[in-house]
Image (tube, rainbow, N blue to C red):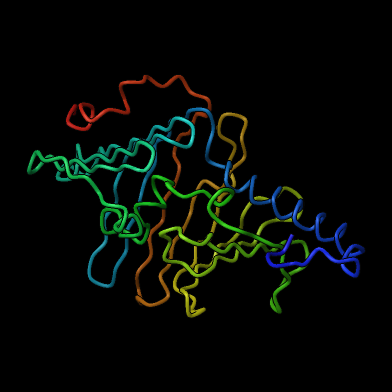
Length: 248
């Protein structure tokens, strides 16, 4: 139901369609929120970062357990090999092998860049959940295309999320995302993520590539591509430990 709606007789007739709309929006968001999640998972990924002055490619592996634990290890290039990120609940750490130091990432930096890319720390480790940390509704923008649905997601009050809203475009038939737009609190479009190359991994169809393009930095883009993925994988508990950050 929409916030602030009064429970009065004149609105009783409006309740059923509003409930239906909320249910549809919730089902779409649930599908998006769980698209790359499972009880546990393993993935091998490639991240290609492009700027007007340089570009580089990172090869990495990632493990998750539910929505609370994430571990990422960079394998290549050689100068970045061993760099690792660990999240457990609301806490996150980075390990830099060059200095042999483990640094705890404060909540204020969750929306900061991960490894110089256009993805944030939160994009990679998923501290925030669309389903739990946002309110959402189905919308029909002026640019709406037939065969697609559009969801507006707004961060819940009190959440340390820098976006004012997100607009997510999904395929009507299977709710697979096509595009996600991120707006600041002044309603300025700040970045766009396009989902590409739908691929089947372990009997699950997901976009294998996600291209993030900031709107205020011309010439910048980052493509994150899944090379391998296993869902409900057999993941050892000791992967999600501070000791494992240094174990390379």
